[in-house]
Image (cartoon, rainbow, N blue to C red; front, side, top):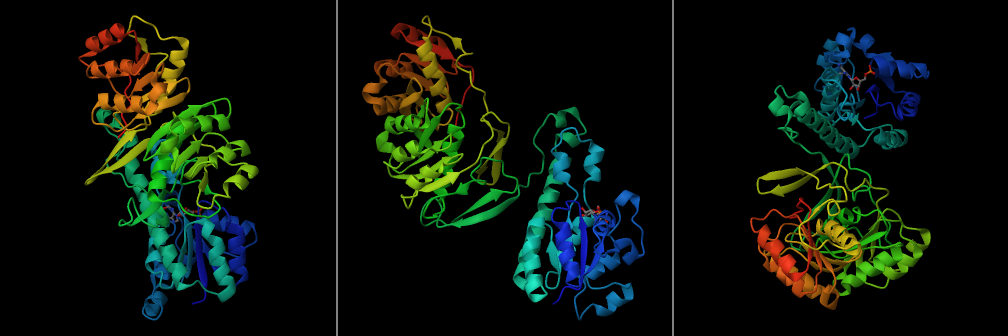
Length: 522
Ligand SMILES: NC(=O)c1ncn([C@@H]2O[C@H](COP(=O)(O)O)[C@@H](O)[C@H]2O)c1NC=O
């Protein structure tokens, strides 16, 4: 069906003028609400105002402008069935609706916006038209995202109409758009800014939480081959995230479910460090982490910290990958390398590895940025603030033993502590300087994690320092560490048995710092 009349009513005028001009050139009649009509007319695009079309003025400061039977009848009318009704209303068939909404989410993201401002930015007429048009997508095309203008125009230019499949696709997108819009409003109205009591305003979590996601791609399978899977991205994903990353690998092979989860873990860990750093992850745990003066040596050190486990690993780097680093990366079979960017020569080296996925995230937010994390549990979702601690927990901690840690031990402890945050509990990290030598992860008993870390480190455990993500409930963990040659420990403290644990450290000549902070990771 050819496009006869289009209704344009937008807040975001990106790309609108060339789109409208092209429609007009194709002979499409353009109807438009106040502000939009003015902008179009100013560009010399012929336009009829909605006021003129409905015979009803915009009133209540714009609260009512398109909410009129001639508008909604024109959108919802079925060709053939509703022609008489349409005529009775004095309306005409509207075939294309181009609407984007008052920027509620943008206004809500400004903490200084007043409550009245928020309310006035709740669009009513816009979503009504979007929903009407999407319902009647058998005839009507709804465009609520300027990035779709080009596709719609291309179809109109070549066939004079919009295909059924694109109309259906845009209708689904439109309902996702209004659903996300309403979810944001309900989140704000049930959140601290709208709270009517002090108690409620102290609770940062809104009663109603609906999160908008969009499928990025289907996965070959889920965690295991017998499970199906897909990857969904947040509609407002932050910079430097997997969702925003560009895939640069030669084979163009997409990331698997497990790759995505591991890349996430590696990325989170490498963001901890300012100096050149490398993290090698296997099954969501770092098996080798190192910081160095340059990226190549950081990676080589991280890989060699546990070269056996690094095979088939996921590597995250916090600098542009250069050729020297790429050459060392190419020595091992890896699943994926993620970094802010890759130099041209590094890409050349790494693209020779056909199945290696390369992910360039661009610059990312600092590790201590605020944010929420979400985790599904059966029938629900646990939500929390990110574990976004600034560095310095060890150096600012309390030395509880007779012996003070040396400067070298302190460097190692601060490093191990920050790695420990990214290891599944019970987490024990052994380090020498700014490199891990042994990681004990995901054990049900802390002392076993100490034993595993010691076993992984082998001879290297002698003279290493140890970080523990939570307190030692008994002296046995300290005794096991000392037996492996560990000289200093960082742990939160806080156990009823702290006096016994400190006594054991003193007896064995260890220095121990209580950080006062715990970093469980599940
Ligand atoms: N009140 C209405 O009938 C109404 N109709 C359309 N709008 C919105 O007003 C904006 C466009 O207004 P204008 O063309 O006057 O600048 C669009 O974001 C559109 O979604 C309305 N505004 C709010 O509900």
